[in-house]
Image (cartoon, rainbow, N blue to C red):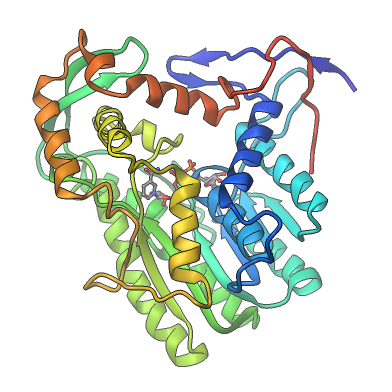
Length: 398
Ligand code: NAI
């Protein structure tokens, strides 16, 4: 098996390769942060399906389910496998590491690398569930996708990140050149709004639940969750009130519908969890938001409040999904994990820094350094303890 030295290669801000050992360390760090080593797992969901399981919130959910509760997990993701000298995507290496570490700890794991929007992915999940898992008692919907081909009509949709109704101007940081500048984003067309809802809204979530219900693969008292974001008013034109927010509102509408169906038929429930802003490939692509996150992380770290994907999912699983949890929901029945981000003192300080941040003081006023490092570590680079001059095996699989 050939080994090679893998150094970070970027196109603009985005890394175009990934480091298998760095990705493995990231997964190990998440497992360690669950903090239950040596103790018996907590009681909670036992058979968990995670859609979008290879990075970000989906991966952290999967780690929390497996190492927090000893659950069998089935993950669905869409990742590029390694080929020749070309490395795989980070999500692929994360999944390889997840499988290796799960095997070591005698946890059942299966993963499907396929387009979750397709009938084929749904068929593969069905087969694995029937053969090796049984009925799911938790289904997490954590896809962040740029496009979707509709399985019935074949229509192709692309999601966009745009305001609705009027253009939006605000500060942003150009991730590549580290310049703080003003950006103006034109409003989305009706078609773009509809297409974004088709990709990131609730239709595919419904299709998954319908399929699993029809094939009797949902357990009594099953729960299903999808993730959303609200954030501060300053970002609403591009997030909450923009195209992605429209898709999230659709997801919330679908949560209510699924909730009443699951309640009636299985005593189950469907909910939205509103999560904190964290660095992922999906969130870094939103205009304005990376500058907001850089300021937010500084303010939250100063107060010892900051959380990454795993800390958020640990709270979700232990405080809301464990059998002995006493969960509290907001007035719309949503789980709020964004409570620390939205604290009034945190938001007041971010707002006071916002007008002052410039190209010159970016690294002083904000945690842009942390944002950048965090972003690179998503691809397995700049991860503590990894010797990047040492050749590694890149042609691996699970
Ligand atoms: P991410 O980019 O880290 O993960 C996306 C996942 O979806 C990956 O596992 C990827 O392989 C999978 N995926 C994408 N297209 C797919 C397809 N066609 N078929 C199968 N798998 C596919 O994203 P992130 O940020 O973890 O987002 C997950 C959810 O959490 C999204 O709904 C997002 O809106 C939400 N969220 C994210 C926040 C953030 O700050 N990152 C904050 C609050 C909510």
